[in-house]
Length: 218
Image 1: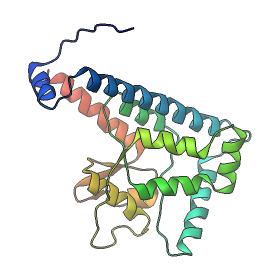
Image 2 (image 1 turned 30 degrees about the vertical axis):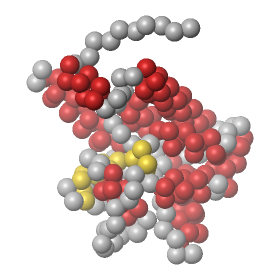
Image 3 (image 1 turned 60 degrees about the vertical axis):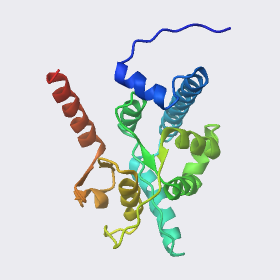
């Protein structure tokens, strides 16, 4: 069963969409399917984070960081540089802004593979299994939430922690406006090539200020 839907859109937007072949029935249908799939993935991803936080006893941010540090130490012993930025508190607000189209989240294949490796660390893996979750499902949902970009090639090491360079390469390669992190070493840089580095709270504050300024100009 089909339904007819009427939308009122800006003329300039319609002209560009028509020129790109995006206003066909099949294109609009596919776009809606992708948006629904991404929204479902976002909800599953948040539920997974909440489930891990609710495990008895819950993992503290320090315990999560310890899992990441253990992973990094193991990787460094084989001269492999990878990293993960995991910060649950307020992260759901960032995902909500992503869902509303206010922000775009970037990742590289290297960062996604590190996420996979960190999730297999003993305590995280045990809690994921205890909640009936699958690491592969988490990775699948993560891919739907982020945009995969090709990392830039950095001519020199930027951060005191070489693992942070993977994030910086992602940001530069994806043309991001800022870096959001909970890592003190990365935050201590302040910025890279005029790209500011914020913690989650500061990022949300900057985003709110920007939206208020835009609203006041209307």
